[in-house]
Length: 226
Image (cartoon, rainbow, N blue to C red):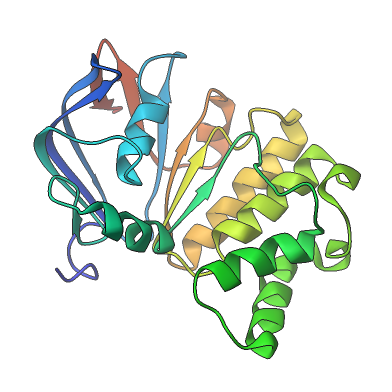
């Protein structure tokens, strides 16, 4: 499939289950290259479950679902890793490796995804740290950073392999308002460089300041906001 012309995400009539419970029904959703979309809704409405289907954490039993050219109804377990290499994930709780520096967190990901040459690894780490405004913090341990700084490192980690798609699950949830604004501004900057971004959030004030498509999870449905 040509992902340059096809939507990066295309769902048609998808039902999503979490532990045999129906979470979302008849989901129709598309996201194209370089688009920014928000996913809003109450806690437990299905936002995170929807994201989990996109990176193969939850299976899809009903409907048509394609992400980055992969058919999620037919994808083999061994190909889920290939899918995940082509997207970036930003978690609310950071999930950084606490026993190593910022630099070594990033190096670990690059080596795990097939990078071999030390010079290439060092150059890419320098690029992403510069992009997220953390060039001087590579030697720091995660516990020496503020919450906003840790989230910037998580975004740096997510963009290491220049993904076509970034999934951000409540990336501002643990941050103060001003730090959260800066994180969303950074995500929009990355989006402008070509990555599609799907972000869940409870902070509706961000939607007016940093516009994007808006979808609401409500009553087991995913609906586009007008």
